[in-house]
Image 1: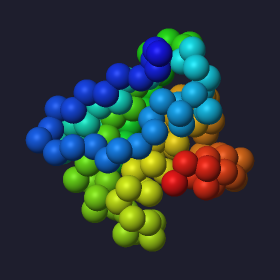
Image 2 (image 1 turned 90 degrees about the vertical axis):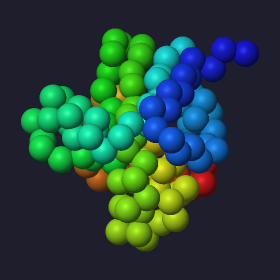
Image 3 (image 1 turned 135 degrees about the vertical axis):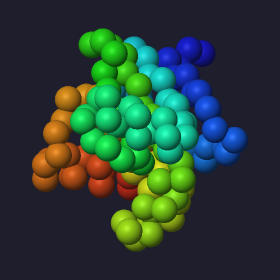
Image 4 (image 1 turned 135 degrees about the horizontal axis):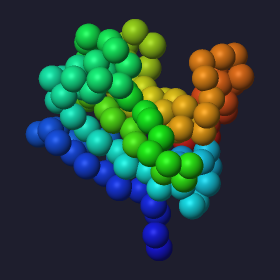
Length: 126
């Protein structure tokens, strides 16, 4: 079974067990190819500067590579630090961020519509 979902861990830590392919398929479709990466704070800061003009590390970055492919990049230390600010466990917040990233790859921008979709998929997959 081809899941069209590749995971790259550039850090010493491990990613939580999450149904990445099922979430990706539900939001983006089975044909969409996604790469998921975990990077250091320094690399997150560099990418955030290059891609968004922001001079700080961020918990997630997502960007399309083509119409049917994209990449989501996590900075796990930042995800862990930010989870309590959203009143979520680390795992639940990680799932939320993956959903958030997939919705951006689908073309959604921050809005009440996006928040409604986030809640719907978080309820389904957490």
